Amino acid sequence: MMDILAEVIRMLSASLDLTMAFPEAMEVLNRRLKVLRAALVLRDERKDRLTTQSSWNMTTEQIHRGQYQMGEGIIGSVVTTGKSRTIPDIANSPEFLNRTGGRRLDGPPIAYVCHPIILAGQVIGALSVDLPFASPEQLADDARLLRIVSDTIGQSIHIHRLVAQEKQHLLEENLQLRASLTTRYRFDNLVGRSAAMDTVFATVAQVSVTRATVLITGETGTGKELIAKAIHFNSPRKDRPFIRVNCGAVAESLLESEMFGHVEGAFTGATRDRVGHFEAANGGTIFLDEIHYLEPRLQVKLLRVLQERELQRVGSSESTPVDVRVLAAASVDLDAQVKAGKFREELFYRLNVVHIHLPPLRSRREDIPRLIDHFLDRYNAENGKELTQISPAMLDVLLRYPWPGNVRELENAIERAVVMSQGRELVADLLPLTIRNWAAQNGPTQAAAEVMHGDATRLAERLVRQVASDPGGTSDALWDRAVGAVERALIEHALAECEGVKLTAAERLGINRNTLNAKIKKLGLE
View (cartoon, rainbow, N blue to C red):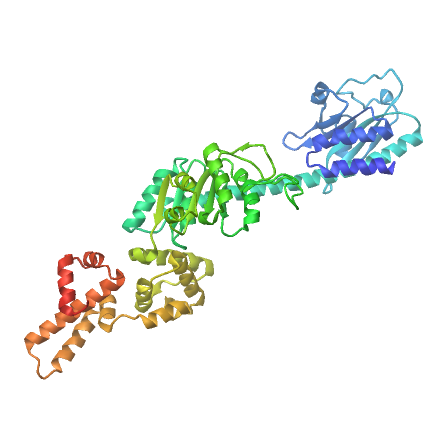
């Protein structure tokens, strides 16, 4: 008996679908008790009535008829009182309603056992079982066995409800996360108003609504993944998966299985079938970062996915169709990689349907103040700070620094400054050591610094004192030298901001390039 009971308990406990597990468990129990029929009746809280949720050896019509009011019949009485009932012969019981029908009461006696199902001290239903009557002693033994089964059903229902609640909680969290991501990656939340970034954002808006493959290039830290997410979360696929694969962070021996999956026995350690990133992203978007690290053999497999929209798992000869939009990113010149024979030309053209190039931060310095504000707001909120000011000296350094790590490096610098700050103002001493060392070695001239900080009065006063202290000077010399010093400071600053590009510096100053060249030559700034 114990082995059958153990099997029944295992079946009821192992499945989260009790309506499927119940008849299978009753089938096993039938070996011991010769069960004639069984029903799992649960309370419907909304309608305050009892309905048959699962059964064994009952027709669909009988299940449909198996509904009771609270207190009605033996089942209704058991649920209302919480007390078990055992009846040796239902034909002699006036309380037995035979609501479902289908029983022959004119034959051998049919015993009836009904136990309450209790969850957290509350009766939530009942287990009812029809048995052939053999003897009072045998019926008592069978009733004790069914009591254990009803208790197990109560535990199974408890686990099922906990899992259902957790599933609902995760679903709500997932919906909230998707809503948050969609909001975060709206076009108006992307920071940058330079001409170069305006072009990028216009392209992103145009390609998002399509399924076109996009190649995103740019130096490390320019925000390639941010652009990829903006494309996905503004596309019709926004409610489907977005999966990122860093082709340079996974060993070559594992990357194929990671991307395309494998079947059991494909290699040592492949103990079961595994779904790859492409199948997991089905219906959504896959972002292949650092695509230039992809080895030639995997380039061929990726090319087939792009062309045929199907893949083969490692170790399998069967093809699996996939509907995945591919976004790829590279921090190197892929065209040069193709010419050098390091990247397949046909794959490059497949990826390069739409090309988005992200300029380095040093080429769009006008976006730096907006980025500073953006990161300042984020890390103020994360760290409970209220920093609202930035010192002129720190702003000067941030505007002049070449930013080899681009936007990511700027973000890290602002986060560090916010975390390490003691007051309400960000000062240059809060910047990382590498930036402070660069600033110490590449500081602007005093005159250029005064111009950048808007302190023209201090500059004029200092120049006047310098010229006036020259005994050989004249009023004409004072004017020429003061104007020349201001011009020199302005041009030095503009050239520093534009990395020596005269055309850009001339536009920044609002003068003609030829005029700038003449002044540079006159002031000896060559």
